[in-house]
Length: 303
Length: 303
Image: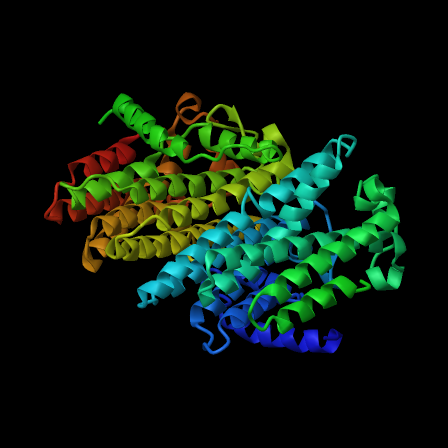
């Protein structure tokens, strides 16, 4: 899988995603514009992609149910809301993301907050709306389990928790940051939604509990490897590759895996984690080629 | 029903609500503290109260199912998140609420945002977790419908939508604000969660679609009357009653129902709306006394 393949897949995902986006009525044009702008400002759509591939690995013969597409769209809404809020002045204070103005930079700070709130809530609107149409009680049970995984992984025991510790340690100057803190932050801030994506695809396809746990482990390893690779790239990448000057973590006094392990061991950890993810995927008695392709792509990226 | 009765009821609701609050683990103490602080900082618990009374009106003989309590807790988490975010510097910039420091004033702006995010998401965690335990397919169907109502009324077609138009018109100096804008704002910012509370109680009790619509209309009227009464109290209340100087809307150039209708007609509108709510409740072939007691209390308040 190369960059063009991934781009093509992202466009396919966008067709599904955009069909779920809200339409403005007479009085909500501003909030709907801010929400849709945030989603349409781009992104690799890795999470819905992994969800879709996870579903098809476990359900090769099945058609894609609408509820899967609803969860794909909901996942991207949650990822997007987290970016909206991360970019706010009180958080990372970023004006640009992927070359576009961030939501608060374009719509003002209040709408940076409100668009994020709107998108987080909308994720659950999409799922609830689709659930009311599920007549098959078995599929409804699966959807409830998937919804439960999504909610847990997005919240204080997942993404919000990781983000919160990251912000809190930043505020305290990172002096007390230990490797176990970093592991918690990476696992929750980055891995949690990847885990949820892989788990939800599997759950909706009818995978058993052990298989769902395997998908969670794969997601955890992919997220950790991705995040540690980020730490390394921050030191070795060029301005062109990164879209920002190299060494920004070091200048900001931010501790990373490289701080704790050194460059060589951090690199080994990326390789170990990605290998672990691939082995877990390959051991499943299903065709997980599409999945491992994305994992390999994510691990080998230069930017 | 007097102030003490309401206080007692609020304490009963708190016992239910607090049983659902998150417990901190090793690494999430800060975010869990900020979330729980926000919920425990007080409040009249009107929404879960209305939900509970609505349930018991339609299901006099039934025990309270755990899923009702989950929705009551979720509703209060959503109401609380909206206050957390409304109080932020980029929104209303309030340092105090009900005599306590607001979340951002106590935990910093980033945690004002994160606690709100955590609480909004946690509302859906509570519901999803409880849904996985529902073995009765009929009750699960009802819970899905209730979840759908909650999500819609909390989002851009509900509370977030109302809040967004309010913020947007404020930003543009309120010059273009018409009465229909105010009606949209009040209906969504204030009525939407009251409507959802009454509807969800009814849905979980097995009310039919027409009855659920009646509860929605009651909620709409209660919210509108409450909000217009707020406009009146802002002009006629004392510093002591309001907890803030009277006439703040006028000084801030904020248009209210009194601006459009004048004091007398605005008062008539409050009476008309509360009467309408009481008539709708009384016409139902159930014991709606507890409900109408709260409605009467809300309409007659001086502060």
